[in-house]
Image: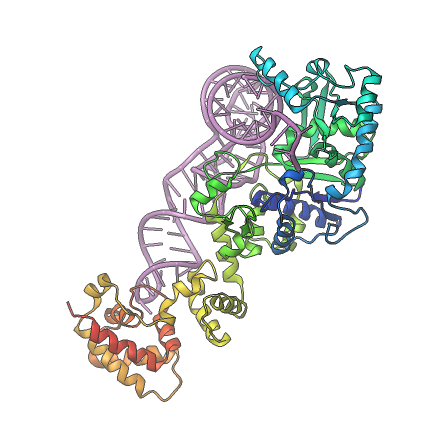
Length: 511
RNA sequence: GCACCGUUCGUCUAGGGGUUAGGACGCAUCCCUUUCACGGAUGAAACACGGGUUCGAUUCCCGUACGGUGUACCA
């Protein structure tokens, strides 16, 4: 790579950041880091009507959470500031005007109603999708059809206008894409895109090209939905005289709904019960709260790992990657071409893998935090114990409480199915004796001596250890399945275990 | 409709002119075990279709089908 690598993620602040956007940001970031380049964040807020309060802050927080560090942004500043397009507004007009001067763009004075009328006309004449293009522009009110003096008058009186790109009538436009190779579009199918809107703001097409050029962006890595407008951008680079500086393009395959039916949508995800946003998003307009992966209990490392594999693979059999490993392994060449269906199951699996890999101490802290939200307090020592007992059976930190509820609450009721099969006279005898033996214990209770004592009891009663275990488990936990019983007993302590045994014997009827 | 992009197990994918088409998630069975889980083992499961090219095509080419994206003074 001859040019310094500078990539950008350019979201528009219209709401919560879609998870697909997070993946795009991630791919950009990995390329930046891999080549010791810069990761730039630019806010594309040229549509003032769609601006949503809090969206920028959300984007910032989401990227921080996922572990993407920005080198330049509205918040970090940088050599090419400002990084908010609304603050760069004054900049764009001169480029649009330059294009007009060079004959590659023109002023158009048609009102929306006028164009709408023309459009209807064309439709009724059988045109399927009417475009403002090399044919129709000659029937409209613009600087191509009006005299110079008329145009100047209109401009002088401040009549609203837009500047449109004058797309050539017959020309092949070739776009080179790092993922797909050369893609050719014919100019006759493109319309004369608005470059500068009547409010003086640029459209995406102009702003994006101007800013990428000015900010010396080397690679534009964005979603595939942009591929159809890439020829417009290529034309713009050419007409602006920036062909040599044109960044390389990589259009990413889209993340699709689980059944492949369209781009991953919020509506669809809602139905299936998983989020589309990294963080919870509270819409300021509607009082709607949308779920976020963070709040659902996903680890950011797990999300990174999951997301990066949606459309890319290292070509090895490695599944688990740290950010650092990804930076080393990632490459645009290995990004796939086909859209990727979203599978929440895989995300859960990654979370479980990351949870298992975390030290108990850290998990305990997270667990304590989680409990605090429910006004439950637990010591670090106890929490570590809980975590070690339950670690292999949970996917999320929040699962610890539910999975191990018997560690916190004595059973009130008992699983009837287990009771009918496993609760019998022998179990009652064993439990009674076991309780007494525990009371006599002088050493500190642990899983090992808890087990030894139970063995002694069953041996002395001439009962098979295995045959009563389920009954014992039922008495102590209320259910027939769970973590190592002896660990549970040690965790609960003699007093609590005794209480539970008494309660079970009192409550459960022998079938 | 038109343009563009795509198509290997249910899903994410590896591979690529001659392979028992590999891995992961999920699923099933077995083992471990006091149960459940973890772990281990095993299994079911894929080259969209039709033509070419070729000794040979899942791989290359062309069509078809299917899917996706785009078709705004939205990004």
